Amino acid sequence: MSTAPILTVSLNAAVDVVYTIDRFAPDTINTATDVQRMAGGKANNVARVLASLGQRVIATGFTGGAAGRFIVDDLTRRRIVADFEESGGENRTCTTIIDPTSKTVTELRERGPVLTPADAERFLARFRRLVGGAGLVIISGSLPPGIAADFYRELVSEAWRAGQVRTLLDACGEPLAAALSAQPYFVKPNLDELQEWAGAALPTDHHILLAARKLLKAGPLLVGVSLGARGLLLVSESADWWATPPAVEPLNTVGSGDSLVAGFATGLLTGLDADGILRLAVACGTANALTRAVAEVRPEDVEQLRGRVQVRKVR
Ligand SMILES: Nc1ncnc2c1ncn2[C@@H]1O[C@H](COP(=O)(O)OP(=O)(O)OP(=O)(O)O)[C@@H](O)[C@H]1O
Ligand SMILES: [Mg+2]
Image (tube, rainbow, N blue to C red; front, side):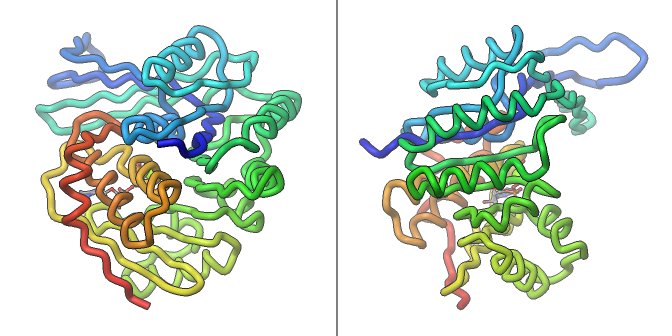
């Protein structure tokens, strides 16, 4: 496949550590029976799924310290080109504790190093250099402390300016709201994120559809609302679709949204029609739910699920 590489942007990249600990408890010694360590941050998750779908990927963002070196090594091992800006601070570590006995998932999060306006300027210069040759840009996740809330808007605008490069944006809160006027090609809130943007609960499909249309009017060319087991609602100026996966027994749905974004990007870049893009996107989200790992899909699951996704054009 000789499509242009996809550029993924993880401004607050992390080392993700997942411990499996039976009967996890505070105030005592807990010993892990399994440890997984990988490059994280949501756009790095997307990058990993893209690579397993056979796409060429350049991952960028900020790295620093030993954690930064780990992130670069882990991505490189997965055949992702890591092209990060050095920051003064060490990347954060995000720890997840899975307890198979109590079936609980406990998350320990760091905020990440505080970045400066000078860091932001240096990153923008790197982004300008990288984006011209990209087939698509994917921006996912939260902004690190110290970066202005409208930074994603700058990146989306820069991508359009640099050569009409489309941006897929998976963000929430102020960074999402501020980026809309730059017209990202696709935004992908889940239901919680759409409710937060709308400032109201969205109890029915009708409410969800109205909120998605309102979000579309604020700037993006496509709005995809991901709804867990219920799939994806895609809203555009000319038509709306629902894409529903088959019922499955999920093992771990964390990273399903990231996997969906990777499938959507792959479908777009390889020239599939709307039906094909939706099938691939939803199949990737659901394939991730079938593995224990975060943002990991088995290609055979994706192939098998693609044909079983139901796509309905609803307008
Ligand atoms: N329980 C499930 N059964 C089948 N498919 C699922 C399930 N949960 C998620 N998916 C698939 O993954 C897609 C994205 O899921 P979801 O809406 O949960 O994303 P998300 O909340 O953004 O996830 P994350 O941010 O952790 O990556 C869904 O559209 C669907 O295709
Ligand atoms: Mg998500």
